[in-house]
Length: 251
Image (cartoon, rainbow, N blue to C red; front, side):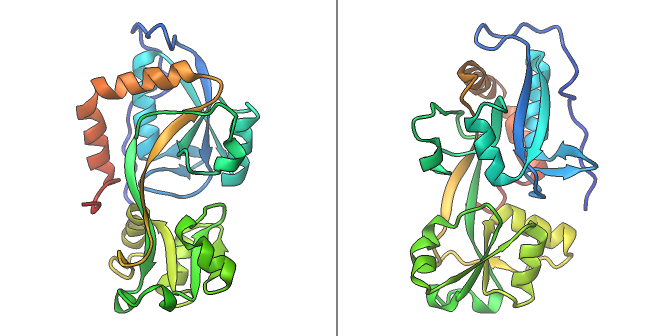
């Protein structure tokens, strides 16, 4: 795995004026306790990756102190709703929509675009949904476009606690496909499993193109200020995306 770049430390307090909506404060950000590079991971008990670099940059300029709290995916949603964490990343208004309904969750503008789709072995690309008899996901994630087939028994769902484990299963013919983030799968294939190209996205199968966002119930002002900050730092945001290749191959 490549060495993680060092960036602005969130704990550093700079003497810069924060906007009225979000004065300098300490915030607990709930994050997913999974290996999901290039977006994020937990390395040596510390949060790291594209998301850390971006959020640290915002925190440093506003004088905030961000405490990152890694949690299992399902528990993280509960702690957002119960107010245990101040903010959550990543989030999306489609995720756990029933659980969050009526709770007043506020979302940021898109932070990064992603594609979640089925990664298959190259020789199986283009064979259609019926060829995917077993579909793997990371535990806690939902393959929304496949729910009807899973409920009807046409496709068997298999969950794996780790992304590298899921990719290994698909590459070694233990499952027919892995439903996951394309950038994350390619990163794992190249940097962790050392088998780039062993799996490819099958765009003929159902997939989702959407975006990761920062969310909060307790601090809508921080979300508004984060949106304003991203608009004033487009070059920085673009540079971090390029450094981590989080949107590589989406076009």
